[in-house]
Amino acid sequence: MDNRTILSEYVHAIVQTFLRAGVQDIVISPGSRSTPLAYAFSQTKEFNTYMQIDERSAGFFALGMAKANRSPVLLLCTSGTAAANYFPSIVEANYARIPLIVLTADRPHELREVGAPQAIDQVQLYGKHVKWSVDFPLADEHKETIPFIVRHTARAITHAKAAPMGPVHINIPFREPLLLDFDFQPEPSTFIESTSGTIVASQPTIDFVEKSIALAKKGLLIVGELSADLHKSDFWSFAKSIQWPVLADSLSQLRTGVPKDCLHLLIDQYDALLKSEHFKQTVIPDVVIRFGAQPVSKPLSLYLKEVQPEIYIAVDEDPMFRDSLGVVTHHVHSVAKVFWKELSNIHENEALINWTEANKIATTHVEEYIQEQHDEGALAGVLFHYLPDGSDLISGSSMPIRDVDTFFNQTSKDITVYANRGTNGIDGVVSTALGIQQARKRPATLLIGDISFLHDSNGLLVSRFHETDLTIVVMNNDGGGIFSYLPQSSEEIYFEKLFGTPTGLSFDSIATMYEAEYFAVESKDDFIKALTTAKLKDLRIIEVKTNRQQNVLAHRQLWNGIIEELDQKWNN
Image 1 (cartoon, helix red, strand yellow):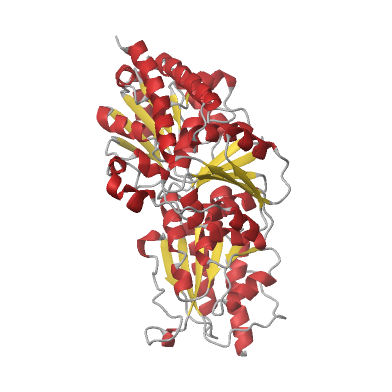
Image 2 (cartoon, rainbow, N blue to C red):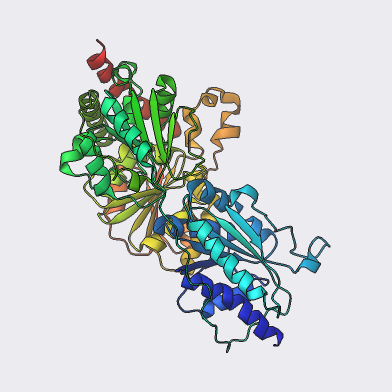
C-alpha cells in the first residue's frame, strides 16, 4: 500500500471505533500535524464537527457539551503548546467527572527531544489529571497496528464513561506526508461493544443505612452536584418516605419541579440559616446522608465540621470519595440513583419542622430583598425571575454561584443550572456556557463577573462558526468582587492592587466585535427592560454596572436580618 492508503486506513480505524461506540461530537482546533484526523472526522458525516481556533477555549467548549450530555466529547489539536492549552479544561473535567477524550497529534518519534519545531514531550502530558493515557504507534503496514489502535481507542472510551467519568488522553504521532486518500472507503470497526455495569451497594450496606435512618432523630439529606443523570421522581419518593429535610445545592437540579407533597422537605436557604448560632443548635443532625459533591455553601461546610455528626454517609461512585471536611464516617460505593431506589423507611424527623419554618422566614427576607435592593444579589434574583421556562442557567464561579445559591429559589419552571465546580476556577466559563447551549439546543443564560468574562472572551470565537442562543449577563463591579467578602479586604493599602484589580473596562467593544446584541444597564428598571426585550441576535451581552462595596454591605444586611429573626425565634 502507498502512504496515503496506509494513513487513511489508520485514521479511519480510529474514527470508526468512536462512531460504533456512539461518540458523535468532536471539537477541532486547526493545525498541520492533526490534518489526517481532521480530514477523517470531517469526511464522516455522522460526526458533529465544531471548530474553535483557541485550544484553551476549545477544551472548555467541549467540556460544556460533555457536561450537558453526560457523554464523551472528542477534542483534537495539533502538536506542541496547542496540547498544553487543553490542560485547564482537563483538570476541571477530572475533578468534575466529565468524559472528555483528548486526541493530541504529535511529531514522529525521531523528532522528539531533538529540537524539532512544535515538538514537546506529549507522552502522559496531563499526568494524573486524566484517568488513562496511551501513546499510539505510527501508521504502518504491520498487521498488529490496526488491531492495537482499535482496541486502545475502545479502552479510552470505556475509561471515559466508567464511573466516575473523566478525561482520557490519546497521543497520536504522524509522519509526513499528512494527506489522505479521499476515495478510501473505511470498513466498520472490528471492535463491537464495551458495556459497563452499575455500581450497586451490597445488601449489608443497605441494611446498615436503613437501620441508621430508623434510629435517627434529626436526620439530614444533603444533595450536591451529581455526576450521573438525576431521576428526580425516584429521589423525591425516597425523601418523602423518610421525611428528612433536603438541603439541595443550586447545582443539584432539585430546586425545580418539586412535587407538591415534597415542598416542605426542600430547604434552599440553608446557607443563610446556618449563619444563626441559635438555629444551628436546634437542628444538630445525628445522621447525615450526602449524595453528590459537597455543596457550594461555606456555612454548611463549617457547620458540618463543627458538629461532627455521629454518622455521616457519603454515597459516591468513586472509591476516592469526596470528603474535604474530614467528617464522613461511612462511604457507600454506589451510584446515587440506584442507591436511593433500594431504600424505603418511613420515619418522622424531629428537626424537619424547624428547618421548614426557618426556610420560610429566610425566603420571605430574600424575596423582600430582591424587591427593594439594587445590588448584584437583588439583580441576580431579578434575572432568575425572568428566566424563560425551558431554558438553562450557567453560573460563573466566585460571587455568581453564591448568588445563585442564595437567590435561585424553588420554582416550577423547567430550568437546569450548571457551573464549573470541579476546581471552582473562573477560567473557561464563557466557552463552557456555549458548549452547554450547543448540546442542549435551548435558550441559555450565563451569569458571570467581569474578570471571568475577560478571562475567556476568546470563547466567543465559537459563535463565529456555529449558531448559538446565549444571553451573557456580566456583573461588572470593576474587579474581583469575591475578595471584598474576605479578610484581606481590610488591608486597604494592597487590596485594590492585588485583589480588587480594577480594569476600568466596558464590554460594548467586545459586543461589537462579535456582532452581539448589547445592553448597558445602570438600574434595575434598565435590567428588566433588557431581559424582557425580544432577542434579535443569537448572542446577547447585558453589561450590568454594580458597586463592590455596596454589594458587600447589602448582602450582609440581608444575612443580618435573617439571623436576627432566627435568633429571636430559637433563642430559648
